[in-house]
Length: 262
Image (tube, rainbow, N blue to C red; front, side, top):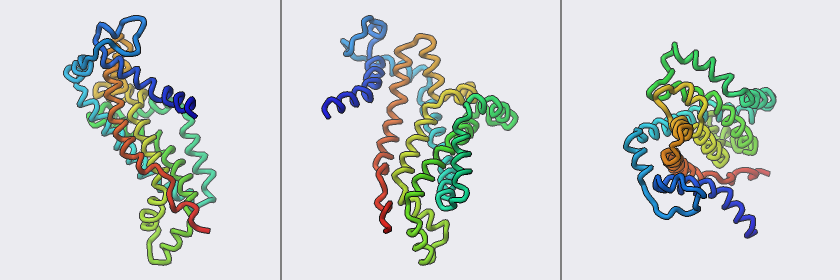
């Protein structure tokens, strides 16, 4: 068990430690070879220069907004659809098969026609990233649908039927009974959707030409050999993601309602 935990810690924390080490190393040590595991001195120079000269606060805000907005839109569309498939078994195969098919389409095949559609609609390179949000919703909704379908399938329908007997409408039973009972898997889906949008590169590169989110900027710094700036950007990207995961992790538990009806 000790060996397994050590390997797990190495796999999970190893990349993060490399990013932190590179981001907090002075410029003179960033290119030193062989690379030392622990820098001889620590410096906030890379992070400070990045924050002062590249308007990182605006990029962080835009990335967070796009991630949260696309996650909420995916939930508004995908969760009711997943619940409907879980209760309407006749459409289960068509609905889940269609969602899997959409996920199998190469992103570049969607990005090119989508970009040509966003330009006349005024959503291309929008300061608020509305075109990018739409792209992330198109690719993220199947994830919300599939996860919610699996979650609601494990929620006993007798719970909702009992609510109907007590006078609840189907919509209220869905909101008050089904969603709380499936809150664990739905919270996990929320984490996946946010991180997928937060880290997404291709659509952000093609749709947000100048109003960039953070992944394209990270690519440019790496491409032009700015290792300190790239590592500092990666460090800045890690922190909000950790905050979102920490907030949603409390909900990522299996519902106590599942299996509660004999």
